[in-house]
Structure formats: C-alpha cells, structure tokens
Length: 187
Image (tube, rainbow, N blue to C red; front, side):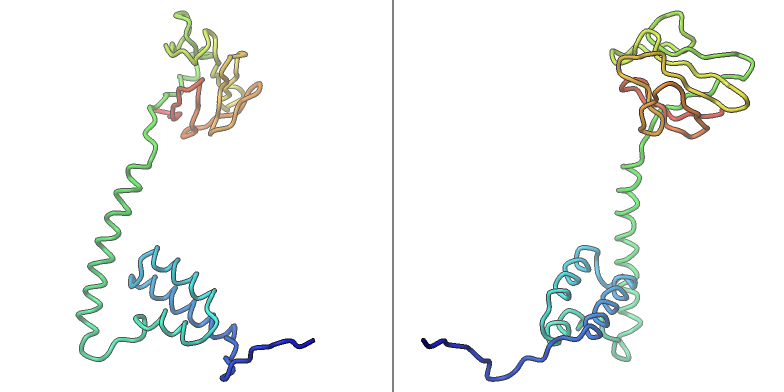
C-alpha cells in the first residue's frame, strides 16, 4: 500500500503572534488617524486574522507606513478634511436616530395622584386604543414618584420594562402606557 504526500519545495514560515499583533496595532492606529474607514478597518482585521504569511500582513498595512518627507503636510490635511467630512455624516445619522418622545410633566406634589387612561374623568386622558380606561396612576410617595399599573390590558412600562404593581420613576425616564410613550419631565 503506497501513500502519497505532498511537500512544498520551499517551507513557508509560520506567522508569529507578534507579527499579527503588530499588524493589528498598525491598523487600529491608521483608523484612529482617519486613514481607514470603519468598514475598511473591519475587513482588514478579518484578513489579518486569516493571514498565513507575513507578506499578506505587509500588504494590509502598506498604505499606513510613515509618510515620506515633503508630502506629510498635504497628506495630513487631506486626511483631516476627509475625517471631518465623515464625522458630519455620523453626526447626522445619530441625530436622526435619537428618540423624540413627547414630554409628560410630573404633577405638582400637592395635586395628589394623577390618574391616566382613556376615561374622561382621568387627570390625563389618552385617547388611544391601546390605553385602558383606567390605565395607571402617578403619585408622589415618601418623596419619590411612583407609577402604578391599574390592571391595564396592554401594560405600563418604565424604560422599556413592564411594570407589575408599581415602580419608582424619575425625571428623564421613558414611560409607556400601551403603545404610547412619553419622557417624564419635572418641568
């Protein structure tokens, strides 16, 4: 029984962890300096982790090597402009994803409990099909604001968590009654 083994004519040296770490640090420095976009950085990190030879790593970091004398000022300016232009897009994207909830002003402490629901007799009437007639109650108890669900069908939430019984709320909390959400404000 004969078996055949293939041997490379030239042995390929194994890539050391130090070489891979050096390449990854160069990539992160390049990203921090604005030389690489986030997508490019992620793709190059994937390629660096899969690389088997040091030549493959050299290709990934070739454009991140120190600049030659004379072109440094112009290149730094160009990267600075590109970085600032990229930051504008990120800022606009963040501005559109920020939630814009209507404010719900906390009542004056002497007003007593604020009942919330669809019923016209409530202190805060919410005319929405997911709000129960007597949905919740908001009151000041021992110096802290407390919201209590009154057995509503679709529930009351505070910061995304459903309230069972009652829960302490603060200025700035997100509070929901059914599918209606508000941002609590001390006014």
